[in-house]
Length: 474
Image (cartoon, rainbow, N blue to C red; front, side, top):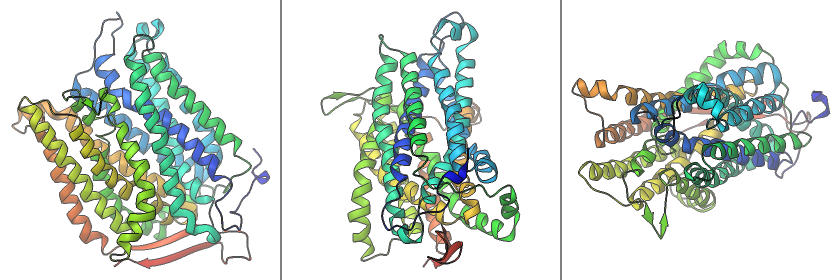
């Protein structure tokens, strides 16, 4: 592919870059595919898996929880390799395009699971192969997609960067909301079943790849820096950048340990023991987390255009302060989940409306932590380390998922050793963990100093090739 046919630097415009609609359209379709598959995964593993004889043989709940978080974790540590491929070899555009094809193959592998061949071969093996391909594809493109958004901007339109990351996140939740509602219906339908429930996300991933390819001439293609960026990583500045950002990522890691329990994980399993009739709608357990995407869609414009400006008039809302508030809100959401589980453990059958309350609080925390974290990760990276810093952000998600995964696998042994973390005790543990992390974060973040890096534009207009601004955080 001849990269000289494409824009190499952001154009000198004050409006939204022309490649952004293609990137956001691609992200919406890709997120439909990923969250549609993810939301039905734990239900499939516990209730639909069959053995080679075709007899139903679902995984035990704690094993399904453990493998679910291992898959999510792999999706978020794979970005390290995607960043090396992107920054050191192919560049962001080609990395996204090529690994999206791998991603499509993963989805279509899962769509074969209820065929006679897959059952004879072993559904667990077909499931594993499909998830490995998805993890390689999704994980490989993750650090590149967010960084590719930032690459479209320069000094002349940098004021739109925070807004576009908000719309980028909007597309994520718009795509996921549709799939989270639809895929569980397909999975549990006698007419459709797993083949269509996993096949539809594959079709959407194929569409996402096509949308991205169509925008190739509109996007800025920042060329790869070569493997010299690894030398940057080992340099004094590189080590300094990583040391600085991990002071923050260590706390967002705990946030993700909790958040990923809400999206197809432990909160979904909790729904199996709740009254799922609410506002005249009978929900399926896997459908309940659709409200997270809906709340996010409502909160993004509300926060960006009203709440943040209103708060900043009396209390300047820096990115680090937004993250801190989000951490406390996340802990508060788990207080509600903890209370729900206490009721279930005592024989109650609480209404799912209580979990909706938890989702409202969690969604507010997510807007403040996750969207802000994307922007933070991009701006804190020197230009040759953009994808790598995005990979570090995603690595914090991977490490966060290891916490509930290991605890889930160890639940029987922990109980035998006198440490019972089942039921309400499980959610109490994570509630207290998040509150403790949020309190410590307040003191650590006060000593953090930001350095903001943006891509240069055409020479002679806005100064030197790489711009960095240091901001002292009060």
